[in-house]
Amino acid sequence: MKLTYIYHSCYVLETDAFAIIFDYYKDSGKSPLEGYVHDELLKKKQRLYVLASHMHPDHFNPDVLKWKKEKEDIVYIFSSDILHEGKAKMKDALYLKKGDVYEDGNIHVKAYGSTDVGVSFLLQTEGKQIFHAGDLNNWHWMDYSTNAEVEEAEKAYLYELGLLAKETNALNLAMFPVDPRLGRGYMRGAEQFVSAIRTSLFAPMHFAEAYDKVAAFKAYAEAQHCRLLPLSSKGQTFEL
Image 1 (cartoon, rainbow, N blue to C red):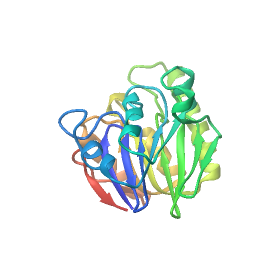
Image 2: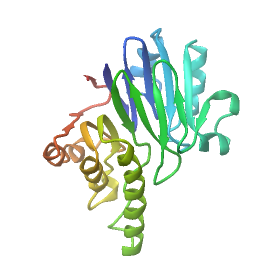
Image 3: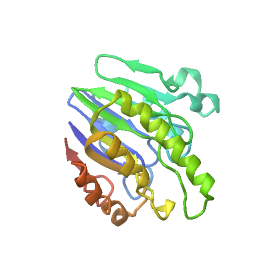
Image 4: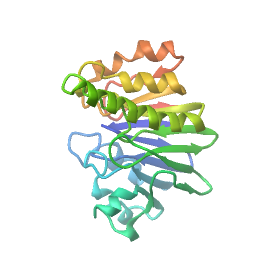
């Protein structure tokens, strides 16, 4: 199994039999249609699962629906808000809301909550437990918010995290936001996550090009016996 970082919150998880792409926004190359997805992934013959956690344009690009013209064996699994907000049609995908499950012979996917729009995904495949947070995070914005707003964000996040932790005591991989725009305490949600759920490998998201800011999470992650994926550029691939 291998993991490829595309951009922003998009990762590709691949096995010999199938691949899963999460929250595609734009490709890993110099232009939005150049890079690992268009140059390699879409040309492979194995089944492709396309997961989108919510409708925000940096997590859902409707161009993914054009991929079915290139690939016969493709399965779309979207958050239900994408349908409700008219970003896709009923026939385009399978839609999950919080608590819903999709399962076939390859994957088991359960939708969990978010602290923004849509859902997060817990995926079970080939004996591994894998989590993609979507926009689930502690969006405290403490440099810009009132104390009450910070407390509200904290409470909402810890509630959703608690629901996941009750059903998941360990993860092989978590893809989770580490967004420097939050300012002071930008790693707080990630710190709370790996403290609550034993996580073997942490793959950061939502950080634009701020690789140095992401690298600062390494010390905390390692103190929790968690390895931080050592990202330095788009398109990097790692064996899991």
